[in-house]
Image (cartoon, rainbow, N blue to C red):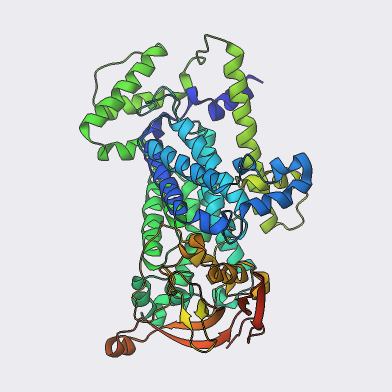
Length: 554
């Protein structure tokens, strides 16, 4: 019983936490704050057009429908927007989240700022419907929730040596990192996609992803052997290399540099918003202070030594004057010999806090382990009710990136006309449109409207109500929705007709780029959704149905 108690405190009590991860925790939390900054900053310019009162998929309408669940709606849709779903509330949440994330970067009251970031982001994700169905959102919410148990207390905690990170929190964040890779590798093979089995998955990858980059154009034109090699390397990394995270120090350091180099390559060749940045910074926790302290400026190292020394004195340990390396190593060596945590005011308060932390983190671990086990053992008898209970909070997710590769690139384009004959396109901010325009790199910024249209192009308009809804709002010259585009070609007077058409895109060949200055070539396929107009009674009417039945597969 005493041994179980020691193991319990070793895992969950931050006063017995991992003193060799003070620097990696500090780096991770600053980087996580920057990712939150990118997420909230992007939403400031988009949220009204996406889910505002006059947006494409209004949050207010969604929440009104969810009221039928009674009091269970607060668990099914965990969002502060239940208080109010007005545009003012939406913008307030985004601003609070942005301010909190900046304070997190500045290491000001990290626990409180992490909680504010988590609640504001969860509030958006829960009510954003199709605009939040991304694995990156789940990754950020999962990491953000676990980080609540990683962060040090206090207004200005510095390195947080008095409360080193709880080992269970570090292990769960690394568990998330591992699962992102490993589960993605498993689903690639389990999906039956022949391109992964014959290593041709990367042949068209760079041009067919949601939002390509100009670097991807050049990589796309590398020899076929390179694409075969990268497909094989992807599977090897996701299924084999990531197991190095469970090996001793030098193996973990080597693993960090390998996966970091890989993520940098992915970031350069595709705009996957903050997804790759988050996977990259989770890997910081593979490193310990023994490796990282050599990169810390001298004046900061002195502060780290001082904080460690003060903490050791509080526990009755002897401190000798020694170089930074010896002091940090000494503090690490005492991890298993610390005395009982001091809880002077009320001993039971600290015990309850550690107990609640253990329940939360154990629940998350179970809820993330069961899906992985079921990937490998479909008839596993493990109960799934605890997994389903956490689903609305997106803090215990399963991952599977690029299980099936997209073989073609289709792009939806909105066009307006006043005579039904001459059509003018609404210009997009981020996704491919003008064949002469160079694909840009803008991640971690996430343009959710442009991103969703790529997904919509892979299905029919009836499966994607955001497309006809956007057509309707363009007929109204809706300011918030027009803000999602790069411009309004019709000025203050909306067009009489609006339609959505479908193009197929390919990267141009080197010869075409050299002779014509084009990055893309494209072919018109037809109308994707009904062509509509606004009648004199204010209602919408269909002028013509779509000329495509489903999505073509040339």
